[in-house]
Amino acid sequence: MQPYISFWRAGTIRLLYVLDGVGYIGKRGRVEEIRPGDIVTIDPGEVHWHGATPTNFMAHIAINDVDENGSPASWGKHVTEAEYKTEATHVGL
Image (cartoon, rainbow, N blue to C red; front, side, top):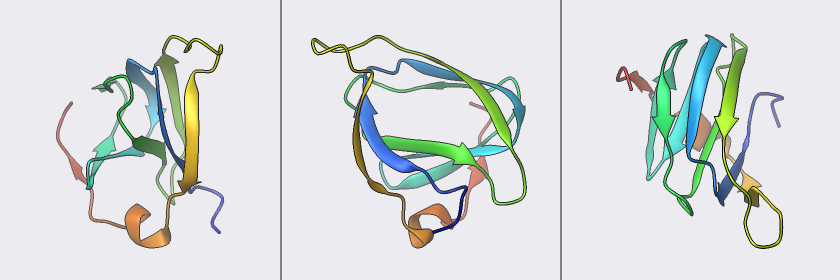
């Protein structure tokens, strides 16, 4: 496993704000490139992943709440190489 690969998760995260670097957000079978200034909205319970690209770091702020058990996320499996390497497009979220 490469160190930049993330985990699938669902939870209470409401948004990500990218501060620096370049990353990916994977949701609903698509991958989008995210850059500084992008704000990504994630619906509560929406299964997703996010992380840096293979050649960049990514710094971000995640604004979220916790569930009734005090947890901000329910963690799933590792994102596979194939899922991670899906062609990403920058959509200026």
